[in-house]
Length: 256
Image (tube, rainbow, N blue to C red; front, side, top):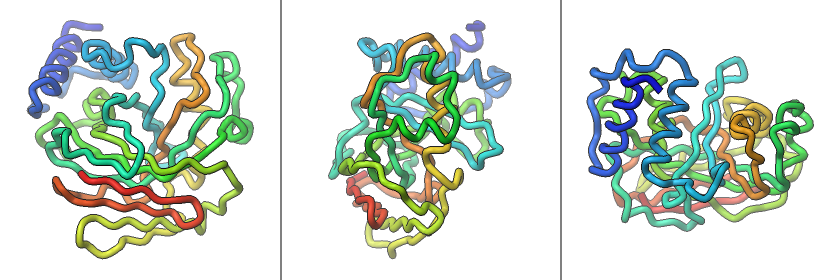
């Protein structure tokens, strides 16, 4: 890494350890490409000891705004990945929001050689289960809307925590008509239908698998990936109870 990338890594590590946020202004010219952001991601994780015993982390977020966009990926710190109903009141969040998603689980090991050959159709056969999930999005940046995408990516793609519902065997789903029902606190239930940005959550699998095996390690069976929000990012507050339900698939509850 460059000296400026190392300094950015140190700043993000200190922000996480000190439960504080950073002004992005001094770092605006630090990263020029996604590969550098991923190097910072990895260095922050190493400094904090998130995945010391896991050559390939067991939980990830992946996604993008459309099939024509460049997908981004981030490994998720194990302490914040919890089975629902989940209570995250012990964690510190700065400006939390939530995303309602579908999580997918690998049913078998995937080697780098296998990942290199996958296409969007064949990759779906590697998944043995799916679940409703809710990600709490939270950043180490003070003004997230004005923070460049590469700085967000370096900060674990602004991940805060993840609640996962009960796993159910994969089945054929008409994603175009799939409903997503999300409730935050006392607000009305927000209903969306067919709003996954990639049209099919499994579409990202070959791209994600090539990313997570790029270091030469095999992705183990049981590795989980969340696949993108059906509702964008919805604001929430500490103490809010959140419920996300995908009728026919499942539901999950959490407390922010």
